[in-house]
Length: 120
Image (cartoon, rainbow, N blue to C red; front, side, top):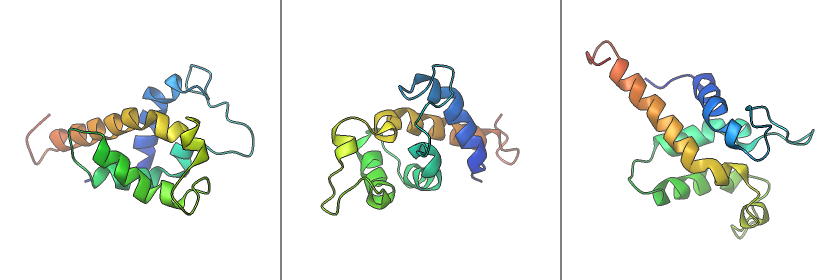
């Protein structure tokens, strides 16, 4: 059973947002008004990308991110290039390894704390 999106978002806010250069160091976002954080905006697609991938390498996760998120992002051009990502300004791309870690750790915790498995 997958956790609710809110649980993932809360854990990402607690563990990733304080490290974000667009934040205040305490997890509060300082993105300019009228702009939404890519993690929040694309959370369902991010969860789908991570949940459909399992690897010891980040490359398959990044490919899933490009297919499920970047493909529908307004910043990506039809040829697949993204000036925001290329200029290292995409916070989702920058912190994606940390986001993958948070999601997978929550999934493992959920799986092993399930009463049916006997794990706690």
